Length: 451
Image (cartoon, rainbow, N blue to C red; front, side, top):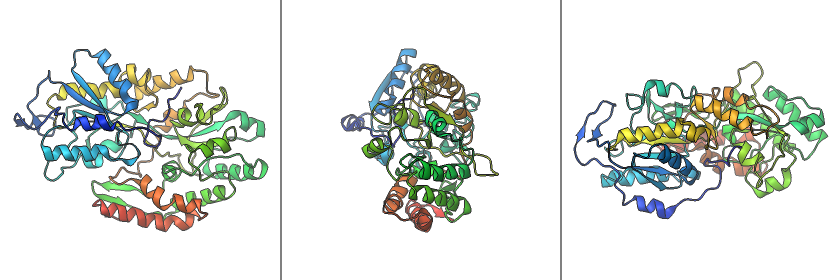
């Protein structure tokens, strides 16, 4: 089965004590001389026998164990930290401390965020950028080409790749096949069909729902999938924001109707209230791949019985090609300061590509396409699902490229600006200008030029 969500949205603990230990660890440094190297960034003197230090969150400890088992000759020290979960920004904060100290950087870091390349690729106060360039020889082109199309977009800045994606969180349409058949409803193929079905459910089966809009990642599910121009990152420090576009307005209008009739409640899917009110009452649910294990096949959440949960392709707006948002997924960075780039590269490729982890142990949909195909087959063989999971594969290639990964958090902006307002009864259409202003203000604080 899918594991519980590993993303920044799910509750997780931060190993504060372990993180504190890293402040004294000097896994690598700029001491011992540098060379221009052949990978597109200055390198310290290399030592193929040097121990590498890897930062992971608690949910990625299995990746470390799998690597150690397959590579007993590589010296590795793992340090657990919070993975920058829930917007803690701990990854960036600690690297800035090491920049000032001139040593202490870990060799490899896992992050739950997709926007870290925006800062990790840039020099800070004249210091060398933390992230190593991967697509100029450090990782082979043949290897990079096997990631799902578009998967490395959040890792790419001005044509250079700075991280490897661990997993994707493409939005698909989850549905309860048993309930759908019982009510005699057809599966919607377009967002217009989806709204019409939601209105029908509200009239004929009050209390049943077709989605949820109470989480900070709501815009990634609905507005990103709707091609809303709220987050068009066009350069390292440039963003285009236009929440007044027709694409944004149609999504907001649809949600206003379904929020008002109760079929899309403004309650977090992780709230006890959600489980209490909607267990056995979720008819449809647009949401990321990890919803399966985090919400549906989870005894602590909706706990949908075996044989009921189906998955369908992302919805399209009538006359358009389907697009999907991306709700999370992790990233692995190799430090440009590492004195054992060979081992760091070996580790980063293993944990994102090897069947030993990505197929056999990983809870989320792998970004590495060959592993993803095998992972899907393994999930299907469980017999839990009412349908096959093949729609996930195509959806992984349909993530809309018009929503970028800037330094600022769209989720934090939405949670502060929009969520309280819609909970209090305001319409999303009326809030679009306020959302735009909030995005613009935060982007400018982070040094972006806003168009």
